Length: 69
Image (cartoon, rainbow, N blue to C red; front, top):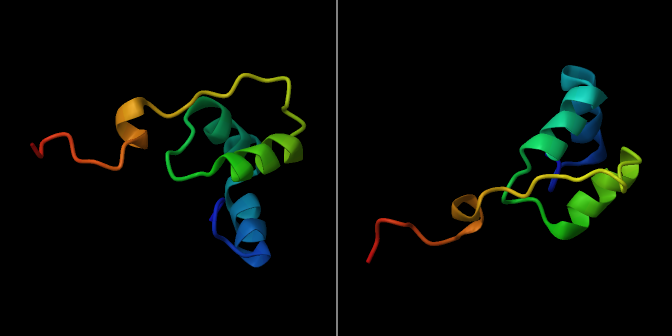
């Protein structure tokens, strides 16, 4: 929902989880499917440009399966 959701979806997400929990998720966990543009939007939304947000681990950002040779 953070990447492809409609405005209605985002309102539901904020009502259900709350801004603090969403902010914490984005700051502490990240998600490999969120684009840099979306992350920049949410950093601006939370006025968090000065914060350090964790990147997802490399294996979560990879599109390839680690067990396929």
